[in-house]
Image (cartoon, rainbow, N blue to C red; front, side):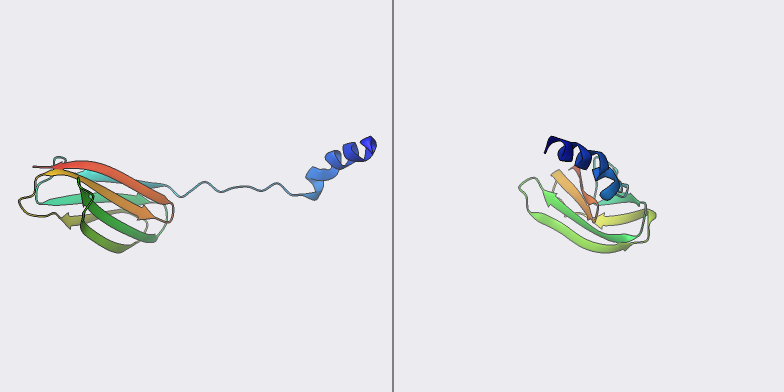
Length: 108
């Protein structure tokens, strides 16, 4: 029995091919200006084209903006209007197939 186990362990890598896991697509986000005024300029970089969901939440967790975009890949700028006269902390989230990015920004 011991010899069978050793033989199986020796030939197992030849039987089962190694699985390679592709790294997740590169996604980056920058929010400008910070502190914010009446709008936010969100620059998103994605290696490849895909859907992008942009949501903005106030400090209490209420959604104040939500939009969906077809991102062409590469770098793209999105201009998002913010609530007038509502200073405070906002959280800007970008959701893609690769995951979610969150940036904290202050509105004055």
